[in-house]
Length: 322
Ligand code: SF4
Ligand code: SF4
Image 1 (cartoon, helix red, strand yellow):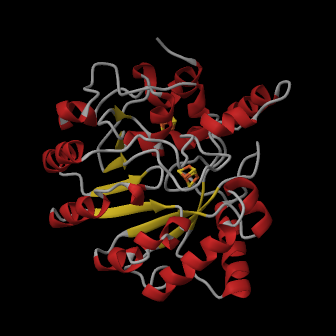
Image 2 (spheres, helix red, strand yellow; image 1 turned 90 degrees about the horizontal axis):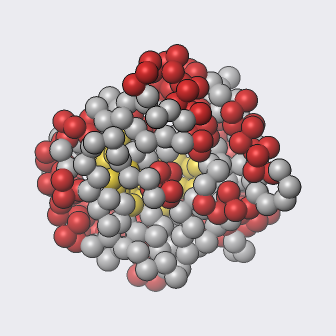
């Protein structure tokens, strides 16, 4: 049965709904524990969340990497660094020739038992993506907590010292998301602003800025309290629907794997507990690449967050926004 989103995209997808095309990326959610508890977190992570991926699930994932020949592995959480098998997993993936991307919140790199991670990352040529929702102290701390800005700047300094954000082989991208219920400004304009401000204020560098739309899911959805606020935000996303984004939706080229091995079309469906469906296997133990590669994607009203304006994905905008 079609929902409102499926109906909106029919002109691009026909009557099959949204269907995936490939598995270029496996995104692994290593657990929901995080040293922060940001206001916009769609997974509602915090220091008290117990959910954590265990090694036997990781072994199934390593088998799935072989079976699918997928070579881009994207590690996220929570703070993925808090998983006790984090380094072992990265070493195993590198032995298979995978490119590993880690979504780090930066502040975790200042903890006593993770201080050597920048050099570990460098040794294994791990690509880094870090949330940094503004270049000002006030806006970052409003979303991510007191003291987070200062610690993030210090972490970027340490990463720059290893060559991250400076050398082409050591990318460090920053992620912006709006501080409220509005769409991001153009990605390239914001990137220029960030580059100038961060260089001028602190002499620090990064590779790219990625803008991501706030999804109407998790803590951000709960923040939209007050009469009609959630409806108004949903209206904005729907009004801003851009058909040109549909071919680049991230769910069409990746599978997301939850901490317990469940399979999802993306991290947002993971947050909503919507596993892969429509006949495709929904657990890593039953990973069948050929079926998953061309699965029908599970959609809902939240998907309008990915198709609004220039589009939004874990890699930033989907279409050029200038
Ligand atoms: S947004 Fe990222 S850093 Fe913030 S609580 Fe969620 S997982 Fe942690
Ligand atoms: S929310 Fe997930 S399933 Fe929906 S369009 Fe975005 S990436 Fe695809």
